Image (cartoon, rainbow over all chains, first blue to last red; front, top):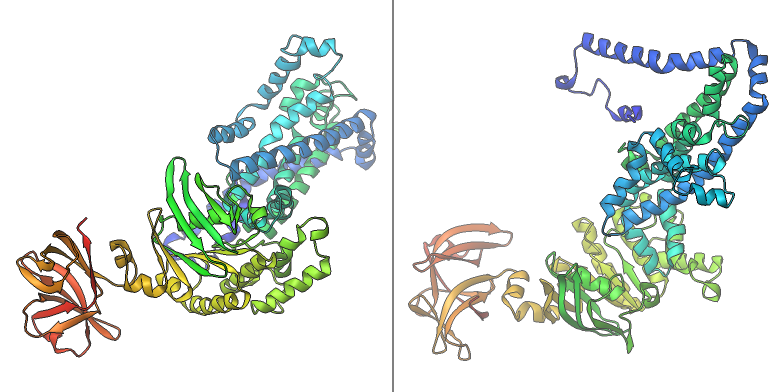
Length: 294
Length: 346
């Protein structure tokens, strides 16, 4: 992910030395190219989403959003995010804590493992769960015997989402915590704090903005995830369809207004995330600068 | 509180950082651990604090074996090299932290904690800065807040890791005097780590000189400077010059000439002569002295440093002359060290 905000740290044209300033035509060409690219690939699709959503008027837009299946898809997406994000907040925080504050064997391996969901195709992530929990899967027989339904049900969707969104919080926190070192915690302990107090009063406040940033990205991905969830969900209308899956179904049924209405919600979520992310970076840029790695 | 370090050894991944170190610190004493980087001084400080556990040996607080007590139980005030102030807390909250995290009846009420913080801020001469954040303070002010925070828990021992290391020279000198005053007023047993000998010699009651994980010498500033007990201490503390010499029948020789120094108790054979460049007598005639050809001359503040080449092997040695001394104009200079010491050749 390239951050456009990085550019804002560059000095003005006037103060730049002539050696690194391109000639005027080159500058204009490059700027126009970039703007054209952004317009075609980012802005235009966004406009299309909203135009299609409102193609048959505001009434049709809200009518398709209040459709029972759509509402249940929205509810499911919110539920999945409400479970997956807190879980990954805890997992990510623990993993970052272990990696940044302690020396142990296999640390490099663990760090790589955390990045796995980024490097594996989401479809494969989903398939792994099918192989594990499916009827013919490793644990399928046992689960069936005990009447536990994981695949094609909410637990499976949550598991797949947790897997895919696992790296976000950890990846934000590891460099931040590594940079901060153990000094503050040692100070807290030397003043008599126990481990929990040191964590609660010192470690957590030190990483709170980085943590929030990670949670924000994690949430955006949890709500938008398609591939992995698609494999494990079974696409049961009103039961196991999340918003992205529902968009696809509606679209395949030529219900353009319905599909784009739901899509507009997801796009809105993306915009809100983007605004919050920018605000966080503007106000706490220094504190989360170490996390610009990916 | 009296602190005793008894035969302590510390290894990091089998690499020894301290070899069998013993040290007695008297109650109320101000002690400096002085040494180059890698000498183990910070490791020793962290062992006393309980931030590290010894591989072997024991650390006593009074009569109490504290070796396996946690840092919380030891009740030490530790001032970190880069202060480690909590950046999201105000100065007052930083100072009150140690009281706030106490449990049950041991925790004073919030109002009392605030009062203590203000009191300590007075002590470190920063009254009125309660509401500031660490980022809004200068380096010297942060240092003082860190000290106030460490003293808030009424520690048995105060430990400071390179307390003035990150400050500029002016502030350093000021804080040094100020730390001495605070120590005299509060009477805490205090141990601080430094690589700056001037700081150690000026500030401490006793200086512990360390090198390569061992204690080389423990003593007052006078003892350390006037009677160094090893070549390392001689060359690490203050200026020193050295020359390879030979001892025969209680007399010191350079090449084929005796230089007029008697060493009746020294064993015959190869040795190294150490002396201070400023602690020499300049001689006119030379029967029994060190004579050399002037190789270089530099003006250093109030004195003149000259480099002499001695004997056929042209050993270089430095001595100090008064600025207007005529010897600096000559091509040959003769001198004899006033105070000196022989160490066996390495």
